[in-house]
Length: 359
Image (cartoon, rainbow, N blue to C red; front, top):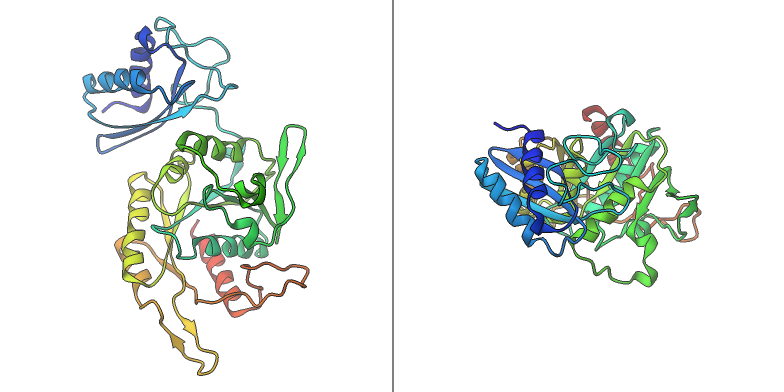
């Protein structure tokens, strides 16, 4: 079986030898399992991918690899590129560190940073994934951990509003300073959009923004970095799997059988890309009737446990349906962050301790 280095060497030589491609090309994020290969191709013109794609697929087919998924992204101008017309020689300029053309990791992504990455995923929207992410981040910070939070749901960003953040990040030199709230350093697309305008971007721009969140933000030293992923298994989720191979995942669902069934796809994606699943959080598990004091199961029961069993993972927490008892006049007001001494806040504190123990 070929190594990742050998795979990249094969496609690099093929592209270098095909002058018809006519553009700079680099390869990274090679994931190969069960003879299924996934690779990101960086080009100056990702919209004009046909010539490069044909050369790469033909070269891999000759090498015996027929199941290939290629993702085209824009080549950052600051990244030295191997020329497609270099006649088989490596491109000029500073060498790119890593596996045969992989980009050099940013300090935060470097294994030496010690930061533990936790992606929060769901199969579908509306299950409270962002609420779980925000409250888990705050609970980890309350436990004395240094925590960062990236709102990676670039189309449906909500973290700033959920945490009651109204200010914008400062810029010092060429670095952006994340907003700190409840002891959590936060970065979101919402900080760069005026008047809640929609983000109308194609896939390559999404990946570029996500990389900027790692490379251009002054995070400092972190114990944990949480990523609030978009629902489903689209471009951003795959970018996270490729950019952060060491990331682990928490899958969020409701007790409803259909929600758990769809969430299993997100879990299957994590397993396929060799990302460990920390466990499952069942949100909106029940509603506590304030008059009778009894639990009411509005969305059914058992979905989280069935999902955990399907994924061979632990059911980490069952969070009730509700809203924080906060008031806008309070100095630490947030529409979605539960107070530490509230019943739900204590459930999130227990969840944080389980995550600390498992990660």
